Image (cartoon, rainbow over all chains, first blue to last red; front, side):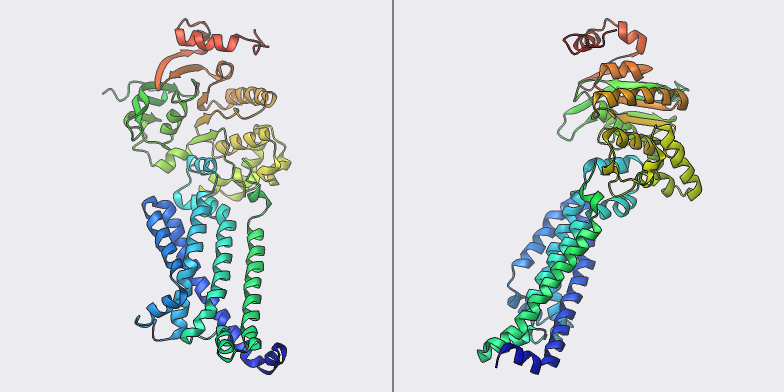
Length: 217
Length: 257
């Protein structure tokens, strides 16, 4: 049976697993944004925290994904459901690009602009919301883009702990030594990664308009 | 201490020192006063402590010792945000917000001060005319302006909420000579009308003689001398003489006398 026949015959399941996959990626990316951006801002305000925070996020990233899923198994509440474990693990992976890009985006704002703002009597909050975050937005969005693309890939492994998603087809195909089943998982996942890349890339350009990239001063 | 020694002093520095954490001192026992409505130029070579002095006045830096009084009140007792909003600040790099149009750049402080929008709008028009800009550029972004236009916007932004004080850190230093001369002249006539209390930092003797009511010569963190413009031109103080000679000598002096 070739790939197309398999997809057409199992279209309901392909759709369902794609939606599951999307849920895992979306939930974890949103969580990573909600945690990573504040953390990234915090370490620009309190420099002693920046090395430990980035260090920990870096170490998390080096843990093999299967092992990380295994570590979470005994955790209370989280370990009770496979999708919770998967979302937590994916969130942890996505943290590093979020924190790092928020931090370097803010740190990359021209110091003369910051000094002018402080000299004008902007409070730290006003400076952050009106100047630093808008100017760092492009870099931050590119962090979201990296985080989402990583999540789409790692989420395929979540099937190994029963969290569903397109990894189901990949593992099943591997077990059956059937390439068309593997492709039924791999191709939609690849398409999803590409779409995330293109979509966030577009947003990145949209939110860092001409006048910001040309950073005149 | 005689706290009210000088009633008309708008800005007063009393034995101010500023040391880096490694003990290196950038300013040493600096005392000077700026009278209400006058322009004092801090003149000196790079590293003499001019910029440090400015940043101590609006508390971008904190003095290690000594007192700085703005409007009769120690800067340590000022709410730092209030202090900075009554002290306009213009720097060489300008620091316009690149994601804001000219009018939004100028209206940053009026907006956070809660001005009504029609008042802000009128003020923008008034300021653009004051600094010699066509009001049509209000909708442009900083990258669409020339260097001279940007610095004019920088001055307009600093004047937006009509602060009585103005700190200017080599504001015309990065401009080409013609534009610089133009802005210097305009600034002088502007200052004659506005009568702000200005502290102006430069390393350019000609600029200091053009703009300063009094000139304070700084060298390695110390005040060498502070003289009215006319006295400065005739002073026999060795460093002043050296400074004058540096500017008079050579072929660069195309405009002697």
